[in-house]
Length: 509
Image (tube, rainbow, N blue to C red; front, top):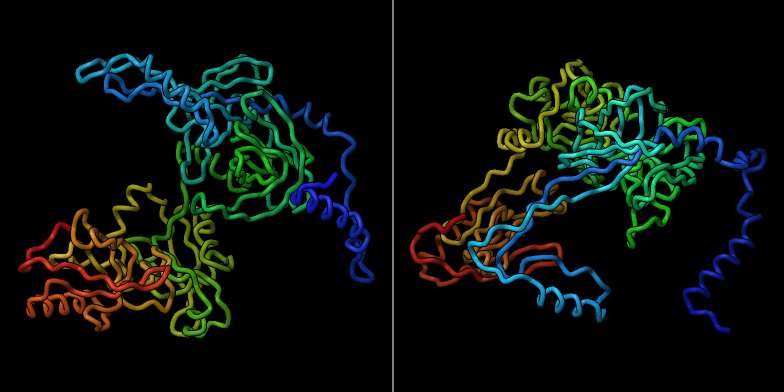
């Protein structure tokens, strides 16, 4: 029987793996490569740990729509072209009650979600992911012996996706300790325990596949990757080492199908332990804050500034009144060391700063004017996201100084490191950045959008908003109906003729 191409390829690869096993174990002469043998069984360890892992059920009230035609139960999701799709649409349309304005809304319903957690204190403190209980007005914890307990939220960390719950048990609970995740090595055996698909306590085994993974879930990404099967409902559950200590909180998976394909991610216990202690003591995380905006140091930037290699984090802006400004940190500085730790790249710095103690005076080494300069900064507590967003307008350095272009329904700003980072523009990009486009204005009608770069107006290069406005005024003075702009996008350049409004009346921008 002839195998399909994909299966044949897989069989061939498996065959090659068998043939190549012996050469792959070859090592440098004089060195010995050894590995610990796999455990005979994980049963004893699992039996000891299972009582410390809990199922978490959370629910919240959802107001359903009512009355208006077209509302009601949703059609279940079926594969494209499935005959059941039309069947359910017809069924729901026939049985939907007549609607109209003025009808009372349908009764409220409760949306439920399931997850996992683990007990860290015998008195009833439980750790889980924030996304497991986010928005919930009722949280129920189900112990290994099926005892159900109402839980209260002690505190949560949205940025780090960690939550701390408290239950009041009748007797002391089985608790598990945190380990130092820095000691977990790639290749070490681990086991994950959780509540996949709501089935109850389940155990899976695997190894540490990688360390320091950034999956772009937040500013503090530093995940442990594992091939121990993690599925929906495992979120918030523990990842254990072979000593029965927690080295991670199972948080996310990479999966095209929604099920485990052996790529799971856990929050390292070193980070989690600190946040959990802060949630227990203060009800919220207390991360260090420097008050800067950062830019990646590219090889071109490093060379232009006299750095031997592209390391560190470049300051693209300094917040008014923040710790960095008080420490005399400037826009354009490159932070090479923070609190004695090397800053190898931009994404390292937020984690190092966040882990530092609030109120602590820390040494900073920056690269400025071709040499290292030492500074001292006293860290503040990181404000919440809303406060940070509001403070952006007070950031010194390369800020976004927007200028409204009269009559075209858009705002532009001079090129800056902050805008290059925001819109992923190349370091050598020149021109003026479009930062806002008013709905239904001339710019929007011609397809312009924030992040587009104006490099020419009327076939003349522009380097500032004033240059743009000067060319537009010249076109109006010549009584032209359109002004031609050369626009740069990631996929290339295009010439866009924009209609000119009569006079200099401004469009909403």
